Image (cartoon, rainbow, N blue to C red; front, side, top):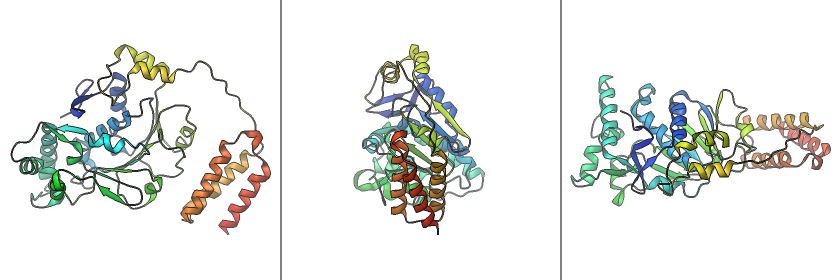
Length: 352
């Protein structure tokens, strides 16, 4: 089974309309569709920031349809940590629907695989509720299941900053009370510190750098970073990780695909024409200015990483990160060697 047919995600709906993929978006999703299974580090730059939502859902569905077979526990639901400051993200996800045929087909695929591998899935055990959606939804909708079901009924959403609350599923959370043993599929937070905490046992992390101002210096393998602009200063920091797959889609590529531009069918999307206009750069002059303090900067970051590994106080670490980040953003002529040397001396004192 595939939830993608041509350029239409025929099983997903937003505002009661099928979610559309342009040709370039279809090509992109084919490239990264197995990122959860492979724990790929992926950098995507695309001028439509809303596309990250569609992209995340598609890779989750791929994992639920096919790649779950490779998990240590194939009966475990996929869990994605999303770090974003997009205030509309939760509302958009809440308003996305999935066809009941897709839901029942996924249940059938997973149940068949688990039974063939001698995993008994007791219908009364809430851990396996994800296999019995037809039964659960029949009771909830009183034997009249609609054609489209809210995505978060099947793939629950939790949100929060330090702690997480699950979005209610249905009237009086009746659906959620039947499926209350496994973690949510989507954990949404603007707190990047959750990445390295043990609070969420996630399979993959998505960082929405189109809404996050600061660089996130340390996170495990298996991350997708989404940028709106290829000239974002944070791109270079993510690329310091090993084996990063880069998909930077700028003006020239958008121009190439413009012949297959789609209609702006819903407010969820931006047309290729609008994206081409937003990425057009008429003139850029880049000049390298040699600085005498490059070694000092490298040394400062090295010492900061050592403090992170030593689990130094998180509040003080955030202050140091902010200080270094602001130093990096200063023009060369505004940065003084003495200030950097003082900072490095301070970091060394903390190490002692």
